[in-house]
Image (cartoon, rainbow over all chains, first blue to last red; front, side):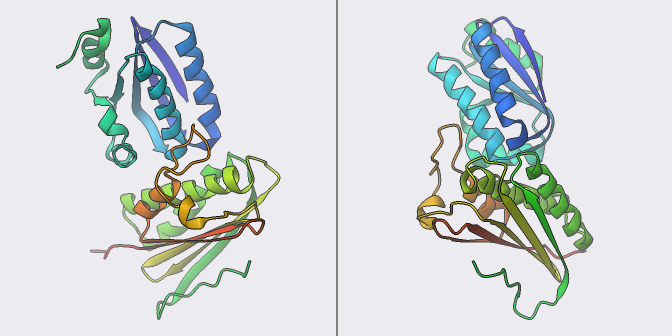
Length: 117
Length: 152
């Protein structure tokens, strides 16, 4: 359900499978633990292996976004298929996040806190 | 609450099913897959099936979280009816009910900061119509309808 990978001050969270009420608490705890343990500034979610996500799953993502954004961090998204993109768009998550084509692109844009613009 | 009565103008009832399960978080996925498998006989597009799964997920999650306050002791019933080229899905709980249905259906109304409050918006965006019937202490019933696009 969750594979975490920290590179510098960027946490890449790879989500797997169906992200709904069944896994929401565990996902929230796993992400919070990682944010507590490492010196993380930016958070990137990799959706490539996500087969379903609903508003409960998006709530977990937005909750963690609020935490990193409050400390000046940015939210990145990877691996969006049309189905996932639709719900991210509808919920407004796409508007507050940056979409990247690959992990490398995300890390290049975010690491070291350089501005991407 | 009166039983769910299914009729849709002159559209004939092709098939129906009813599923009852306890309010366990793991059953959100069961409900999603069951409705999608049932609807598949109308040969919907992948996107239409995704819409049904999304809508069912939101309705069943609401029943577990709001209806039963996350208690696994409640029962949730889903009835789905195929009317020709359309589906009606009825998700019902016997939980605490909603005091003000109109307010509950507003965007970003949520009693929990971890939740988006977009459940009903999602249902409405995935389906053609969403009706909510609820009263405090009398449970909640959500009736959602979707007409599938013409087949080629």
